[in-house]
Image (cartoon, rainbow, N blue to C red; front, side, top):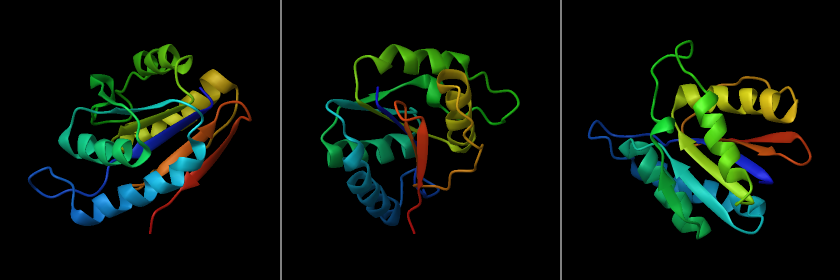
Length: 151
């Protein structure tokens, strides 16, 4: 895997569906992520509706396959979240994709880039809150990262 993109789902309505502005942001984010499409890729999503809908927009925009994974569901609390099984899942997929896009929730989107960087790349990536509809992209070969912020 060359790139790992960690995306926080878009804004959503009380029904759980993402808003029309979240769809627009996901389309724009997909266009920005296009430059990281290194051969084949995969969009991996939390099974929660708002994440699934955000992930489907990205998958369609980038013409990538889409899968859901329960490990990406919200864990409701940074301290209680065991990230090791998620890291193992990402590592299992690393050999088969050039770009892995993970669509998830605030606590996982905040923790995953920092923990992945430190654990897998021996690189300090500051823990940062990822706003809805935004992403952190890690270049696993160069050991660099970039934050994509949609207005």
